[in-house]
Length: 334
Ligand code: NAD
Ligand code: WQD
Image (tube, rainbow, N blue to C red):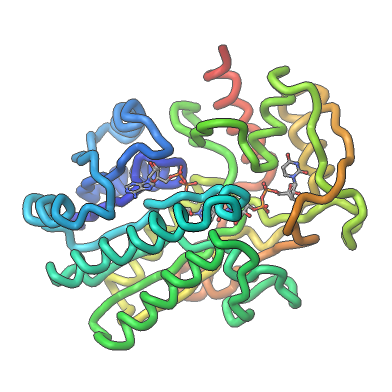
């Protein structure tokens, strides 16, 4: 299939490109490098043996998108393009709405104009906010806590309205839980413009001696050891989830479907630190600090819908996530 991958130079996008190219799909990557670098395209080629076509473009530039659609004639879109730092979205909400919501409107308009109606969209567990029932299933209320999460919920809403108005659209909104790890080649991984805000990248920096100690945000949550529990998912499993969603849309599905992508298993901060210490052989000093604003105690996905509809489930556990992140960290350490 000919697939346009918006934001394909980014963390999840680059891993998904590898999976899709390795399966024989033809890709065009569209990225403005807001949070990625041109070098990743060579790495994608090195791993998959195929170079994706590439355009440096902002998805908000409808004119340029139209040219890309004219030249490449995609049959489907995977839409990763957007900003993702939750804390920053509180400080700069307009930047987030403009890029994430504005960019999506621009992309969906060009798709509609060109009769390209199959899309896999990167949504997030953040749309659930502080869910009352765990594991969280897809019927759980959408009640985000941040501008980032509200933006993603708005995009889901738009896709629901678009596919209700024209049922020939085939839409999968994938709600990712906590993507971590890297490709086992160590060639691609997550790019951090500044200091990372997520747990695993900070653990890797401490293990590598780049950061003195890990700040553990909160030791008094209602969880077995008092630290936050999350459903971490290996980025390579996540990439395969996108291919499964595309196959599902192509073969069976019309209209919109919303699916959680996670492992269904939760791990606390301290448990994750222990696993990382074991795979890296490094000590990870940490200090329990105050809770971070807006953090919830626990987030774990119900994964039965993904299994049932997509025939997909994760294969890799926390051990592999830590091992592959550590390999990436050490190969890229200076
Ligand atoms: P990322 O920042 O690594 O990748 C996003 C890519 O989109 C980057 O290459 C960036 O340069 C590009 N981009 C941003 N704005 C653009 C624009 N206007 N036009 C063109 N390109 C643009 O992030 P990621 O971790 O790979 O996340 C991919 C998607 O998944 C995002 O939409 C994010 O919100 C969503 N998501 C991520 C996580 C996570 O924890 N990483 C969790 C849930 C959902
Ligand atoms: C995990 C746990 C922290 C850093 C975020 C977004 C979510 C999604 C994934 C985009 C929590 C604790 C963290 C640190 C710590 N992204 N922690 N010390 O907040 O669950 O999810 O990324 O869609 O929307 O909110 O992930 O990795 O930041 O935190 O103790 O230095 O680790 O308190 O319990 P989070 P995270």
